[in-house]
Amino acid sequence: MLQTRNLSKRFGAHTAVQSVDLAVHEGTLHSIIGPNGAGKTTLFNLLSGDLQPTEGEIFFKGQPITRLDSARRSRLGIGRSFQRTNIFPQLSVFENVRIAAQSRSTASFDLWHPASSLGAVSQRAGEVLREIGLHERAEQLARELAGGDQRLLELAIALATDPVLLLFDEPSQGLSPEDAKRLMARIRALAARYTIVLIEHNVNLAMELSNEITVMHFGSVLARGTPAEIRSHQGVRDAYLGRRG
Amino acid sequence: MKARSLGALALLALIVALTPLLVRYPTLEAQMLISGLLALGFSFLLGQMGFLSFGQATFNGIGAYAAALALLHWHVPLVLLLAIGILAGTLSALVVGVLSIQGVGVYAVMLTFALNEMAYFSAFQLKGITGGDNGLRGLIRPDLFGFSLSSSLTYYYLVAVVFVLAVYVVLRIIDSPFGHVLRAIRENEQRAKAIGYEVRHFKIAAFALSGAISGLAGALYALLYQFVPLEAIDFNTSTNIVIMGLLGGVGSPFGPILGAAIYTLLANFLSEVWARWPLVLGVIFCCIVLFLRGGLWELGPLALRRIRHLGGGNVAADSKPL
Image (tube, rainbow over all chains, first blue to last red; front, top):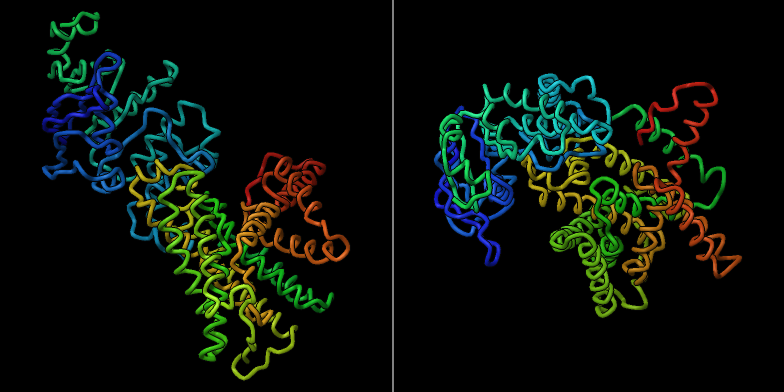
């Protein structure tokens, strides 16, 4: 579903991502893990369209998307979350999700009819809120939500755009252990219906959730395989223990 | 549209209809409404989309010149003059919009300012067309379908009808799917992009709408004084529009209308008794920016909450702007 070929990103003399070949298969939850500074977030930003690669290509469903910006990738069906919570703070929880659902309708340049008359859009927003468990907070302002709920809202915004592929950048970062658990349970439930790429710092969480894992180290792919294979991989153990291979 | 907005619009229409019958200053009152449109055009960009435009006089001036020139040279009928003002304002705002949104943050603001200065000096230099420093004189207000508008009271009522219609249209746009996208951009542009919106297109369209309102105001202004002074496109006018908007508050479309009315009244009466009247305005403006961020329009909901509080009602409920 999502593929990269020889993907590299250099910032001046520093190479953050080096010749990465990634293959995310339909229906899998694919985690990208690695120690701090391994290039995970840079790789994520290349996939989401926030950064342009120095070299290499990205394919989505076989089509090249390397030069498309984040808005176009979203319209193709790639939904994403942000590492730091990124919502519409002064809008209601419902409106946060509704405006995301509206992005799939052709009515966004309608200047005349009330937005509330877009029945299918409002209905979709309601469904997503129920699914994610925020429907009771629909009328609250997004900024009034607790941190964990804001992360859930972040997921809901991504889901409301009806993606086929979801990109999550360290979704549990900065959450309390209980909130992180709740969020991961949601992601596990989503994995049944979506293809997911998860950037995760917490190795145990990633092992628990994923079908496939790619381990990054110093910008390159160190290992890839099932959680069991990764667990027994000597190079990965060394990387996490801080030895250079 | 929400019932509350419709109610407020009906009340506004009533006030607009009765004012010149109770207090007879129709020219001043028409000026208040025209300034209200200018402030509304400004607040649409700032309040809905979060874009601070310091060059609204560009659209006002170009709308005024276009309508005035069409009248002088081709004796175009009145309704068409207003349409020409709208069109000229829209086109000029498209140009300013496309260029300004290339800038980020304060640089975008500076671009609206710089383009305003360019428009001003162009108008100043093109004496053969705009009359330069002397302004564009010799306009004669045409009839409306054979009905004479030569008295200032009848002209006031034309301005009033156009004004109420324009406010109605803005209220509908604010409530439309398009208006909702603008607020999403205001709240978080990066996120709006990430859910698939071509933010650039929405921003340019919002500029065009703001320009349309301002160009309409320009045409009404030219016909009110039967004269277009160079001031119509002056940067000072842009500053005054910003002050009107912030005075009343940009959160609701009714805020800038209130701000423009108060500003115009102060400018008219205080300037007669004291030449240094902008000092008073400055003090009021500072107080509002420091203590009443939402502008004077915020006083309404504040007072309502206080009353509800006294009555033992739910204080936390409902502080939503209209």
